[in-house]
View 1 (cartoon, rainbow, N blue to C red):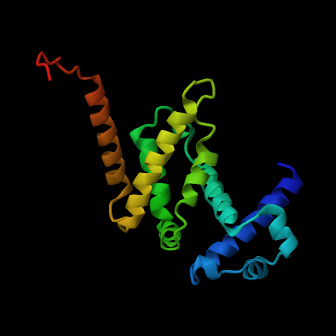
View 2 (cartoon, one colour; view 1 turned 60 degrees about the horizontal axis):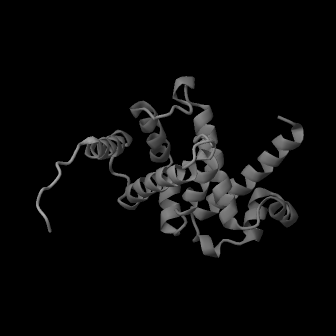
Length: 189
């Protein structure tokens, strides 16, 4: 990685970490750019060079966290298609260990930014030559987001293992329904 890229990432992380630190004690709407830049020890010009909005800061941080998580996975679990139970548990554990962040985002009505972060993170996981890949990608991203949103909304009381079992059990039941042949009815309506 070039020195300039390292510096850029460092500054972006400083800004993002400062916003998240402020979010621990203040509502998102009341946090100012001045407060973020002061805490991050950067100028407003630096802030606006990298981020047009506070929401963009959060999306960056979520994507960065997901990429860091993925880079720390053992090689066999990275980009495994279709996902394994072990990989799915590891993914859900990422949210579980960062539960305070996701609860703060939910309380501030910002959890929807996870959708944008998911698109940035998962865009490389579906083969572009697949004709329906944008639809398949949207189906998986929105489904995953919906599961995580409900998990956060209900306080994340269910363990990563339990939420993964729920997810896989539902997927298997749906697959079973799709593969069963329905008998044709001879009754006319």
